[in-house]
Length: 432
Image 1 (cartoon, rainbow, N blue to C red):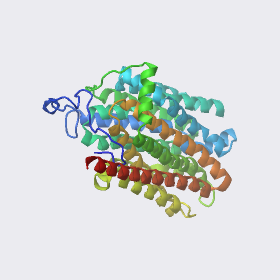
Image 2 (image 1 turned 90 degrees about the vertical axis):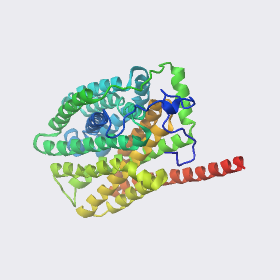
Image 3 (image 1 turned 30 degrees about the vertical axis):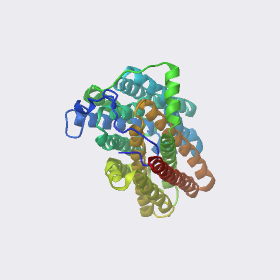
Image 4 (image 1 turned 120 degrees about the horizontal axis):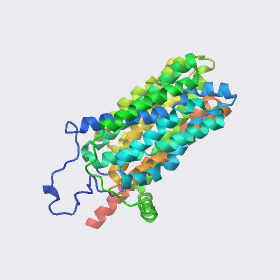
């Protein structure tokens, strides 16, 4: 699918079959496609990897009121248990992507999950808030090997026409992981406390990691790259020079700013007046993540009907509508607002992340890493700023932060539309 925001791209290029080769059309495309050999195993493996990643990454988010209570800290301080994990991931995702270029996507993903689940089993024993924050930062750094390597694996092993759908399934795994982690921790914590709850998530992640390693097919189209810093710098510089990629990185960060802020603070709002919900019920609120599973999986069809820009406009509008609806002091409209926020976020994320995989025809792991770095920086900013805004102005303050971020998404997409029109006019003038 051609880029819809004006930047020239070569879609679906396979490094194993040069596009300029006169015989390229005669070489059979052995990449996976829906219904073909290995596709179902690959989809399930990466779905489980997504489940483990988000379950671990946000394992403390639904428990923040309990963590605040045990350590006697405010929401803005407890939120660092989330921001440290996402910040560690954002910081290390680029170096981990470089390792995946050299040692392989599957190897790096397996090692990352192994370290992350090991740390996850230590988190319940953190003696203080600073120790908990450090462990969470290490866990986030370990998980950095998953997102960029997974999208690069898919870009190499799946045919271009099926790429949005394949990445949508991986993102759907993220939504299931985020949902199940929060629901499970909510009910377990209500009975046995937050420490037992995060321990249960650690055990769940171990099972997902083992199944992932057993199911994921051996890569057939990976070509080892170089670990030389100069090569990495040139690749990153080339990606950052691409205006389409820059816009996609910013869009991912802004969407995640909304999501991180809302779901970091929502537990504090729903356990306080006028709602006063118990921890188990608050954890069950995260069942709305199922909506994200559906919207992420449908991203490919959405782009097919509306185009990339149209899909982003729809995702942004849906998210903004949910934010405004959540301002009500009645539970039903708040829940509907969360549904809309979740649907819009996951759709927008799936569209933007798949566009990165298609736009980058070389150094895909680094392109995905830059996107993931921006994405999780957005999560850290959203978690921290959203909590600070809640402390200063209540839920309305958090909503204000989210609406500003959505306006940023719309503005960037409009600028992309204008850039596309300018590029089209130039091509007409040149052709004439």
